[in-house]
Image (cartoon, rainbow, N blue to C red):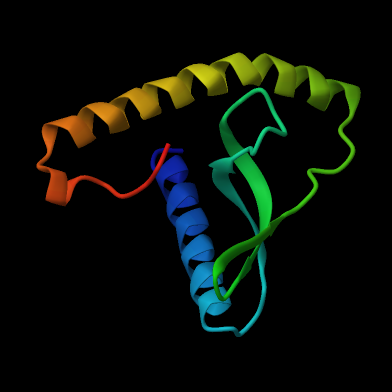
Length: 110
């Protein structure tokens, strides 16, 4: 139906924000999926990955577990798309940081 995708994104965002706040406050250490750098564990530089949150942010990356043959096929098909999207995002970041005054440039390193 109309609007269901927006509602799904809103619900996922709300869940993620609550999990982050609970972790930062030390109330619990939730496991969530987050878009993170793959740290060399994949050909894609960034992808959604299960992580354990804590008071300092991401405490650890969790295993994605054993994948079925179908899941491996889908993942292998997605890697080039993820690489292309990551490259577009990195290029956008560098363009934005060059256009802004040095004091206002983002501090994230890529």
